[in-house]
Length: 131
Image 1: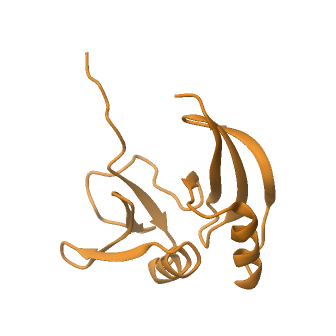
Image 2: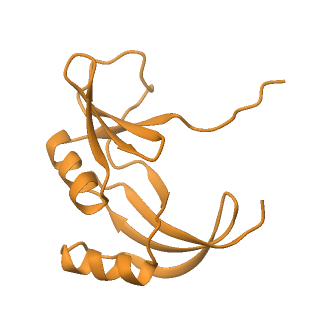
């Protein structure tokens, strides 16, 4: 039986790649990556998010790629109170937070925001790891 180890990268479909890069680099501190023939991605930790334009011609691709269809949860190093302050300083509306949730490895506290394409972004800290 196959054993999946981890996620290497995901693909984010974007209306405007430049706006998406600005949000994820300036607000969330990710790194812009250029690769292939003019392709763009966002790097953080040992993962990346490849960016595809809404009218993308990359193959293979999902059957119905669309913008604003993802809910992404990122574990942040900073205390969420500090994250809230930073979001406020940058003029980023908070949808909900700080609230309790369950992450992949236990209990988390989370803040929710929306990215330029309408994706739900969850910024979290682990409270108690159970695995």
